[in-house]
Image (cartoon, rainbow, N blue to C red; front, side):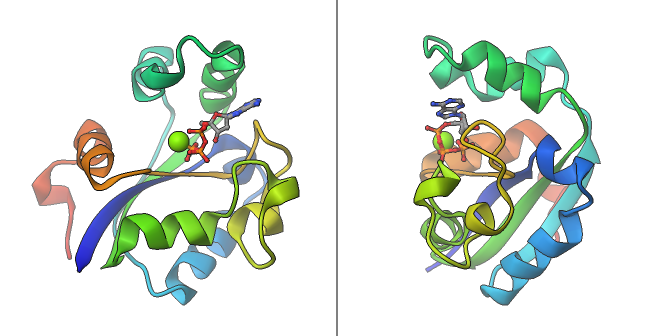
Length: 139
Ligand code: ATP
Ligand code: MG
């Protein structure tokens, strides 16, 4: 089934000029980038985006790294896009990520792991709506 998922190329990756290399991995995996924008997240935007993790010990660090430099927010479209992009990203901790995945190729550590991808179709819809309107997405 054709789906849309939400992706963020995180500050550790934009700072190292890896946007194009990461987009190449995404496109080679058969996912189409149907919306994309470079933005600097505010503290409030980052806190809202990662609200589900607010009780976790790493929450403060997560918000400060996500606001430390620009990010690239994206909508990806393709067959089973939510699960497919999770595969393409690899495990949260790059030490556990499979060969060829974005996190294995580029992530620095578990906190600076280069990309975010939605973990369910429901969350993808919620996350896309935080950054894009329907008119921004050209499928
Ligand atoms: P994301 O939601 O960013 O796609 P994920 O779904 O693989 O990543 P989550 O468990 O949702 O992983 O964690 C959200 C983010 O919080 C991780 O991507 C990472 O940047 C950060 N994080 C997770 N665990 C740790 C940790 N133990 N120490 C530091 N940061 C962490
Ligand atoms: Mg997650």
